[in-house]
Length: 61
Image (tube, rainbow, N blue to C red; front, top):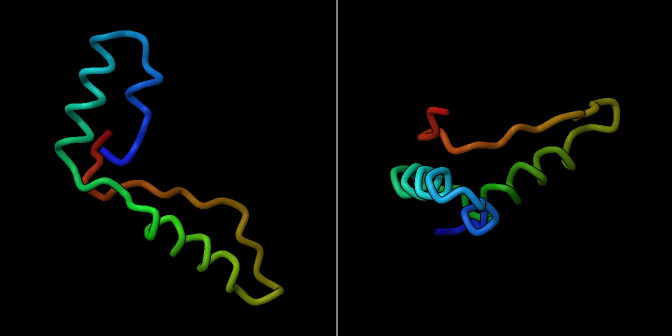
């Protein structure tokens, strides 16, 4: 797993659900985030990128 999210969840049932969900999808990699950051930084000066939401396309919730 590429995230430490489940180690921060204290409820065992929720922790198991998060682990199962992460195992069922292609998780984002550092390169995916870097690409989004590069996109935002490479916009022309007159373009404001105020928010970026990045999530795996396999994620249903």
